[in-house]
Length: 306
Image 1 (spheres, rainbow, N blue to C red):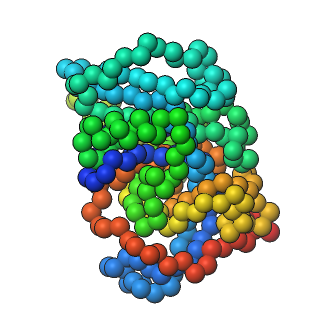
Image 2: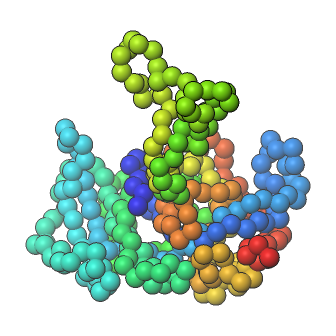
Image 3: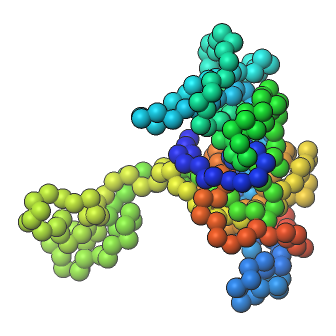
């Protein structure tokens, strides 16, 4: 499971800075090109999009952090009263602690969110996914008030972002296992008459330094690495119970049908189908968000390869 290691600072009212969903698959849409510097700006184009199912998430705990010499440390934690039974499959013992006051030296406010795969028929598991999300914007007191209001309640993707905005997508890539030099790094094949091997590198490096440097391409694990794709545009977000406007004929390959809320992300995102995909507020955004994206067609043709 991917982990969000850094959070950008935002302005405005307090809000949640992260959300998550399950990767469904890809399709294509016809829309007006929103990119001002594109050669097809303002014209209808076909664009590949990734479908991610984003069921509502439940806020199960509130955490505050304080700044120390060793980094952030948890200073306060409060769990919701109405915890679901599925949660105890992840946390065997209920975290019942004495009621304490929130300390005054709070430097960070976060919440624990729980996604229930049981709401998503395409993911064959019932154990919930738990992840931490930061509350950003405004002041610390406003963030605490926002988190306390949301504790024990459900939040949706619309509480995090909307269509036209950028997000950073964090996920674990597809696993390829142990692969060789050529497949892993794309190095050139050695000449046909090379001694012993062709699919290797010519040298491991010079005599001095007398160790193998980390830059030298070698065989090893490929895939199953956490990756962050910056500035991915949200094309559409829809609340749906049947999602008949997105399901393709025969269902998405290795997933099935979308039955809850979903988002369309412009382009491809890392990870295999059914994998947990995390979204975060963009850390490197330079171009502004887009209002009123115009989508005229969403392909619902079969992806079975017939």
